[in-house]
Amino acid sequence: AQSVTQPDIHITVSEGASLELRCNYSYGATPYLFWYVQSPGQGLQLLLKYFSGDTLVQGIKGFEAEFKRSQSSFNLRKPSVHWSDAAEYFCAVSRRGNKLVFGAGTILRVKS
Amino acid sequence: EAGVTQFPSHSVIEKGQTVTLRCDPISGHDNLYWYRRVMGKEIKFLLHFVKESKQDESGMPNNRFLAERTGGTYSTLKVQPAELEDSGVYFCASSTIEGVGNEQFFGPGTRLTVL
Image (cartoon, rainbow over all chains, first blue to last red; front, side, top):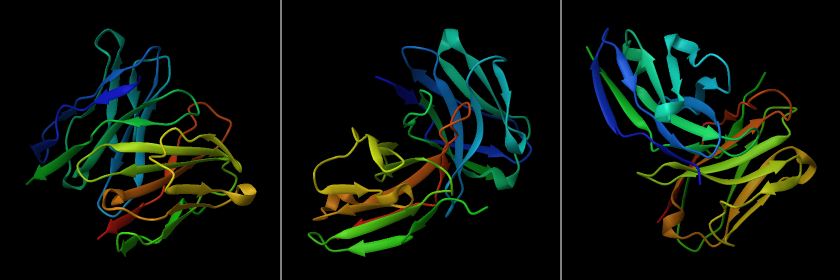
């Protein structure tokens, strides 16, 4: 069965500092991988996705993620965090066209 | 273009009552998904429509939940009778059939509280 682990429930970083959110997945084949963000009162917004090809993918809002097959990881990074990045971040996995399996989410707090 | 909309945004009901949640997908999106997040837990899949047909309902918790998508447009999710453990945020998402990755676009969710 597919599963996604986000080991950090909460992360606090200073504004301007770099960020890395961890995601590990369990899946029988190469999955489709996603990062979503949810700001308060909003729906989930797709940040980026990986299906194949270049293992470093660029997303919106200055985020990027790297797929590492050997580590079954898909960590999300941003070089310099802004206060508006404070939100909850979800890693998810799926097969094409099928349901998403989510991690538990990581709440990001940004301190000024 | 309008995004995925959900109604109501919040619902507070008594245990044993009935509640119906509505989702309007993005126009032209044949795939429609329902997910639920119970407090403190991860977002979990409930079911998947392709047009008006149920493609996968493996995540539906029990027969108190009934989802419909008549005409292949909007969808409703009825909980009858509601129990305390049904409280949570119900998300709807939609996507196209074609295209790599079938990005799912999410609505803002309906927060259901069962007292």
